[in-house]
Length: 274
Length: 321
Image (spheres, rainbow over the protein chains, first blue to last red):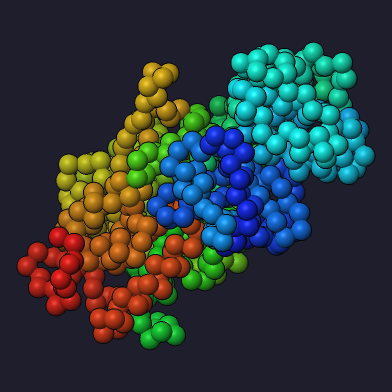
């Protein structure tokens, strides 16, 4: 994805609403008009856990409209537990928006593939695509029906929603990537966000369908702003990357490490050297 | 320099004069530009750049980071574009930074260090050099220099011969006697010492039965290593006369004060920037309050005052043992 000048800033945003969408899945809405104004689909924020004792954590921006932005996350550890303890009227300290988002301008028929809480990064691109007149079909997979959170929202926005569950409790029984592979409506673009195994599977399906795919990756972040080179992924080295990427080693390596937080989190599937 | 509060936080490290005693640790802070939207860089002392080697380096395989209890393991592996590309494409961007810029030199031989330091120090955008002889995350030679008094002396002498700019030598905690290494660095011409680099560590995924880091081992940073770092600063400060830039798990003003009292003239903040980018500014402001409350005029008045036998007139009831 092309690097775009940052309009990121530090915010101390008032929490406006908090919902537990499913067991351990929290949606936090907060007042951040400046953040909303500059956010592009697929970007993320770094949220500072209230105790200040743990590293900030990267969260995809779920909604961004008017004065309100929101994040949706699974409570998986101490940092997300701290964030989940915030309530209406508290302040959430965060910085962003960060990273480069999805490139969606030319698609007419888009497949969006979300796995689990990966849904948190695909509402904004879905809205942007629908506004631009594209057809959007959401392929949404989760372990079980109860974790297919907010799927009605996507239907209301105008997406066609197809679901899959690992335990066969709703929709296709099995992986969401298989649901995509069986499609009767081949898209001209695939956007995906979810666990890495799902993204790998989506990349394979996209290649078989000969459809370009953009994948929003998740990695363990250090700084989240491009300063530490801890969250890198290997990319195929191409001439297009210079001069923003460093030159090759003398051993002639054909791989280059790109930062998920800065060059990503969205990469073209064909760029990734997994 | 005395700032508006009337409290003097300035430090002189070699020839480097800084209004604030805060360095941003090498490899944690990019070139400062990455953090500029979230902090006023005019309110920090210096950014220490990511280390540069003579040739480009791809860096270590992934994953490169693991969060651990009270800290973080990293194994980046000195990913960098090599000195030639760096000088051509990067260094000119640093001229506009409102804080001091310290270049970081790394290598795999004495000649490597001399080569990079000579070329880097020749640039006006670079105000001082840190000599990274203590990277724990590169195969073979990386940390060898900082673990051997003779090699330390050789590298520092070679680098010293290339420049008059301030040289800060970064020491490793992964040694038996850090004071003896510190003395060698001082004797070979170091202007200051950065104490400490990360502590070697490892983390294993018990589901997959495999190391969590692509490099298998890494360097531990964060609060977990703070007492190790405070002791190292204390020991080094008693062994040398040159100033110390104390670092290792500093997250709060109280943490910073431990380092000053142990003998550090300045501090460096690394991993804590990943928690909250405002921490360096907050620490500087709170240091002024701390000094003012005790009727002190300058930070220099507390440096090294935790030596054994020193009677602390400011000790109060309830102080942590």
